[in-house]
Amino acid sequence: MVNIAKHLKAIQQKNGESWQHQNTFIEMDTQANIAVASGVEFLFNCTWMKNDPATSVLVLKAGGELVVKNNFKIFSGAAVFINKNARLILGSGYINNKLSLHCFEKIEIGEDVAIADNVTIRDSDNHIITSNKNAAMTKPVRIGNHVWIGMNVTILKGVTIGDGAIVAAGAVVTKSIPPACLAAGVPAKVIKENVEWE
Image 1 (tube, rainbow, N blue to C red):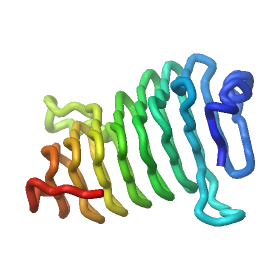
Image 2 (image 1 turned 120 degrees about the vertical axis):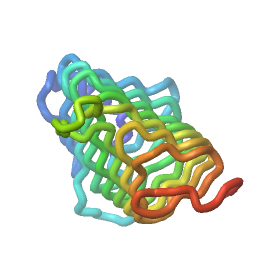
Image 3 (image 1 turned 90 degrees about the vertical axis):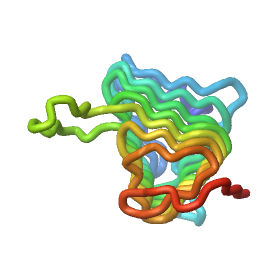
């Protein structure tokens, strides 16, 4: 586990080369930025067991920015890519093992968020469907405050998940989910309103 706030100076001094600590690999372009608020812990590659063999990778391309507002944990087996001029904003909470996060424009995760294992979050399709000239390849993703994302969920471009929402395990989120709703299925649809969780 790495507290990135404590190692940030060492990471920046690598000048674009990879920085390694145990099973954690960080590659940060000289024109990228990591901003962790004062007094905040950003723990990357956390583990549930001793000697967890899973590696975690964090890559920031030129102009990419990672902003951490409050205490946040990302567990082992994570692959986090912040591409050229993209912005990832983290509030507070955690993301469990085997995260796959690819940020091409903007992904924002709110406060008090619980994200289970094996979740994929992407704000881009990476390809254009040429028969649909009006389709945008990339659109921002926003996950609100006090949101619970179940295991094996996929969240795709242009989605907003409202405050207090729950996304059931295995769902594929292609459209926005209102606050305080439970969504499930492929594609995800609201199956219950006015939900609460703790």
